Length: 179
Image 1 (cartoon, rainbow, N blue to C red):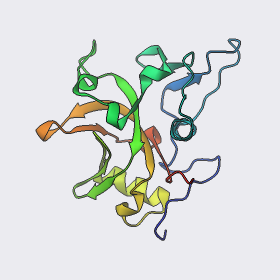
Image 2: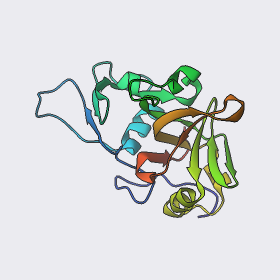
Image 3: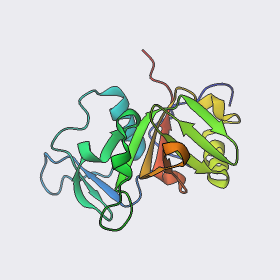
């Protein structure tokens, strides 16, 4: 790939648009039979493009959490706080979907997709799979792209907030929004 990340169409390949393993998305406004499974890529597109998304009535059935309000499940990078990393009943932080703009991709032993206030961490093997699926040779090509990652917020050295992603179906990336 030469310099940009393409948005792609409706389908998903590799790690570019996971479905959110174990998560069913419901619009909350229709009949019980009107349940629709939607990928993280579609939610990311709506979060990026629609200031009032998600609808206040939108509910999600999240594995291990049950039904939750979508507005409490999706968290912008800049809105993440140390409280999001606080363990709940199972001794782990709450499972959520964190999203934002990649401001500084940094590759070493792992790939960090840094954004305002937090990062998405991909171990080396996962990063390789992820970058290959996107057709990206240099992680710097992801700068200014939007990312969503489903996981549990952790606190690293120096209080750095991050979500570790070991399964690329639990994340999606979109190119920068064009005017």
